[in-house]
Length: 76
Length: 159
Image (cartoon, rainbow over all chains, first blue to last red):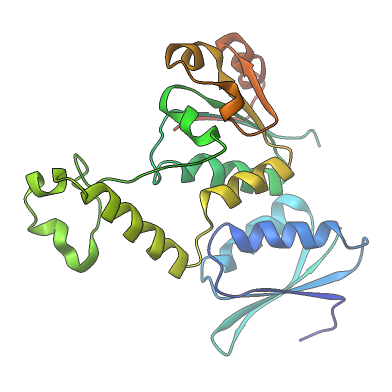
């Protein structure tokens, strides 16, 4: 997993909480900084793709590891 | 790019149907939409400070019950006293165990994200509701006010 500036553990949370928490965490970051999100909701994979497309925050990485989903999002 | 707009009419006041307006409203706001929710008739229950929302299998053959009970349980049984309270408590427990947010939490997230809540003035008066029973930040208005926003909206839904 590449470098990141802040981490958000959204494990155990269901739709739409991972997205809402991520949005909040990104709001506190400067442009260009990277947020690492950990989630267990399988729906979050498609949701973070859609979130990235619609908000312009780049989804750098999306992968499953150890039963959890990991996302790296760079703030636009 | 101009900000997209989502207009929602929330008409239902049960625990299950309280979810769609707040889930979609908060998510749209997170995606950058400007959102207004117009609460009318039973939807006004969703604005109360003290939420007492319930869910009932009565008249709802599609509602799954623990152990597939809905497949054999006679409809009359779902009307027995206490059934509503039992089902509501089971639903809340199930939601908490699956990491589903509470209505209070989603409603707060909506307000934090500047989702605007409008209470239908006519139904507030019809039901003798007290606006002081509602959470803060609610605008009281009529149908024309809804269209002012909905007419410009990219998405409009009736829930």
